[in-house]
Each structure stands twice: as C-alpha cells, then as structure tokens.
Length: 368
Image 1 (spheres, rainbow, N blue to C red):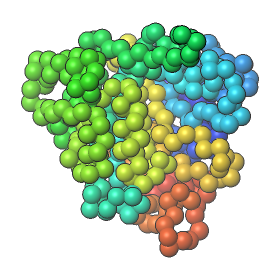
Image 2 (cartoon, rainbow, N blue to C red):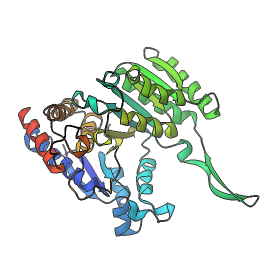
Image 3 (cartoon, rainbow, N blue to C red):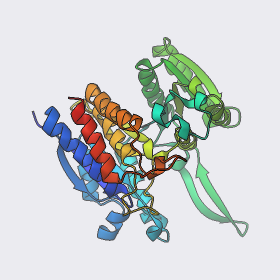
Image 4 (cartoon, one colour):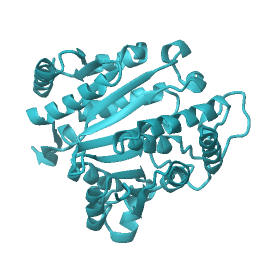
C-alpha cells in the first residue's frame, strides 16, 4: 500500500522554524517505527503572496485536496498589514478551511503536570486539566452574507451576518458527541440562545441530535459568556465543549491560556471522510507567526509537534504512536526542558528550538 501523504505548509514567521522540528519527528517515525509518510511542501500566507501575489495558489489548494492531511505552521506578519483584505495572509488559511470543508475544529486545552505553575490560575484549578473544544469552523459570522462596510445616511456601517443551517449545526454536534464517547462522555454546548435566533436553533438541533443518537452522553447547555467565566472559575468541570465559529474562536483562546503558554497547544480541523476513509484534515499549532522572535531560535516547537501527534491519532489511526510522542514531550518537560516561553522566575538557560527537538527525539529513542 502507498504511504500516507502529508502536505507541509510552513507559512510565515516562526512557522518554518517549528516545522523543521516536526519534519525531524516525522523522519524518526519512518526510521524507528516503520511509519513512513510521503511528504510534500508548498507555500501559504505571506510566503505565498511574496511568490505568487496571492496567499494561496490554486495549485497548492489542489494539492491540499489530494493529500491525507495538511500540516500548517503559521501565517501573517507586520510586513503584510497594509495589503488589501482579499490578499492578506490569513485569507489563505480561511480558503483552506472553507474549500476543504473542515467544519470541526478540535482545540485541546491540556495542562502537563510539569507546567501547572505556569498558568495565571491557581495550580489546583488547572492541574490535570484536559478539555477539548469543538468549534464549528466553516460557517457562522465569519462567512455569513451579507457582509461588508457600506454607507447609510452618510455614515459607514459595518455588517457581518451570523448564519447557520440545521445541517451545519448537526455535523458539528455529531463530531462533539463522538469525541465525548472516547473521553469523559460529557458535552457542554455553548451559544447565546437568550439573545440570538441562531443560538436558539443551535440549542434545538444539538438537543435533537442528542435525543436521537447520543442519549448515553451527558449533555448540558451554557450561554457562551457564562462559559467564559466558568472556564476561569472551574475549568475542570468541562470535558468536551461544543460551540459555534465566533464563540469558539474566543473561548478556545481563553482556554488556551489556562495552560500557561500558547506555544504548547495544537489543533486539528477535520471534515468529512474521503474515499479512503480518512477525514479531510489540517493540523496546526494555536500560536501565531510570532514575528518578534522569528529567526532567533527561540520558538517553542511543541505545539506544532503535538499537532502532528493529533494527525497520528485522527488521520492515521495511530493512537499508540500519538501516545508515545505525547509521553516523550511530557517526559522532557518533567525533566526540566524549557524553551524561552516556559522559563519560570527561577531563571536558567532556555533551550533553542532545535535543542528542544533534540531532547524530544532522545526521549522517543528512550521509549523503544
């Protein structure tokens, strides 16, 4: 059988630096675990704009549709701030999500024991934290029409439309319930049904899907603003959080900082199964392009490496190997390995991006 295929889009800023470490990890699995991938690379974001005048070339989009999974680094940077909205680096990312129909964004917020002191919350609130946020990714206010800036009564008016169909809500809900069955068997759905008609529909459809096919999963509902408060009050009450595109964007960033560093958090964006049974999929770290540290070997590669671990689990049915990689990361953190973003008040010498890759590879070797 052919090797599974990966398209790497390293992007901008620290994207290429952290992706270099992921490529070393991919090579390790080929050399040591007989798990070989056919890897290709291309451009996205500002890098694509510099080369082609667009943030995502049509040929790259076609490649993304053909591979088993896409690994993305980061896009954007101040160099591109003055570009027209239609060609900003982020439009390339949005095009990938939309045209691949990656409707379910999985954002874990997991606290490694060695980093429990790094959160701004008390240690007892976040030690052992393991939340999964399922954010609907291809509809809602970011894509709804009409949209734009118009003139009404000699005044500028900005318009964005929150729009959801039953089918869009249903498939996101099913993704959340399926995940919950493999975790703590609890889903909390968050919306604003008290003030938004789209929230009323969201709650109705989630209830219908639950009653029809997932009655054995514990379901609760919460207004999204209360959800934000509860995430910083008692985050371990949650297992799987299901929410829409806008609220998911906000709540997942809130949950991300519970763990102390954006440099630690991966994500997966999944779509419907392809002919080979694998879902359309793109994996990317939560952190941005970090132009302030680009080229300084300070970037933490762990979020990008953990994104590859998610690919092993969700695209390639290699849960045991994903566990192996995550355990290696947990070990090096427990042993005190730190990049600059993870340095505590006690100080010390941080590892460079490649040095963190070195110790993770060593831990993988030790796991054999």
